[in-house]
Image 1 (tube, rainbow, N blue to C red):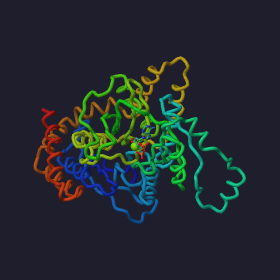
Image 2: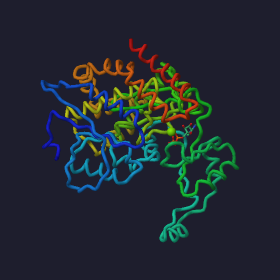
Image 3: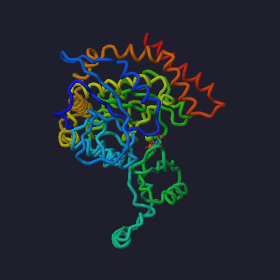
Image 4: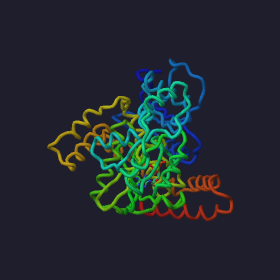
Length: 415
Ligand SMILES: Nc1ncnc2c1ncn2[C@@H]1O[C@H](COP(=O)(O)OP(=O)(O)O)[C@@H](O)[C@H]1O
Ligand SMILES: [Mg+2]
């Protein structure tokens, strides 16, 4: 079925999932409890379904209005299904599978450098061990210029980080403080393509922001701690100017690439914002990581998905980089003016005003619904099962107490 054939008041949201079960259960439960969504004089009904992987004909109908994808970055079969759904069936996707495939961390750096953000100095070095490829041997022999790694590193400056151009989950990331570590890290990089990036060290705060549709939550992150303690519950830990720049950065990167569910990492020194990682196809939203911020994430994910489905928001897989570059290149605009323009472009792309209006009218009951559910035995059961599945038995009690405490704090803060 194409868009035109879809029943305009019954909406199916598909979840394309990996190993997670906590947030999908929260999403399913709350969407079921939401009941009819009233919009422009009509009642809409939203249901969810977990998508299975099976052979598909490129002309097959797609029953889902919208798909939240958590899998396609790693697995090609569902990735190709998403592309077919986008191009043949006009299915709305949170995150454009075309740019997520092509625009790893590297392209995200390039785009944000072009728009004027303060990305630490970054160099891409050729493979230590090029991929085995019959024809490549000739090309490499003929055209690969020999280079001095030490000289490149001196230009970047110590300390620095060596990390894969398309990284994720801290795979292959090392901090490089001297020449010996530099060579060891490069020798070990093997067939990974590596960036050398100047370290932001020391910094005052590590800000991790989660963006869903037009809304962003900036959280204080402590990468040196175990996962359950990394997000600190801290309200106003940034200078307002830095907070505003991170908010704009997050919406900008997403609107630029048509990503709608992404997280962004920036290191902050005073009012200086240094973005280091902001292309995450599958941002972590596990309750055991986000804890206090989990209800915010679920509320946004439901609100944005329901908004897109119910208002029949048109999917956009094309990008409009030129309009962003025109702002970046305008010599009459200050950095502050540019941030303002980027914010406007992002708000336009995300229909921010319409979305907020929709949340305060059609979804007015959602915040209380989420609060009551988080405060219920049903959520506690989910927490018990998630803790049991995540930690060794000897630690269950400790972690359960830890997360229960944080969730009660959130419930209290809502009152
Ligand atoms: N330029 C940098 N300055 C300081 N710390 C960095 C820098 N780059 C990476 N790191 C540290 O390494 C971690 C992993 O690097 P990141 O670029 O986020 O890769 P990944 O995509 O694997 O998360 C970051 O969370 C941060 O703690
Ligand atoms: Mg990271």
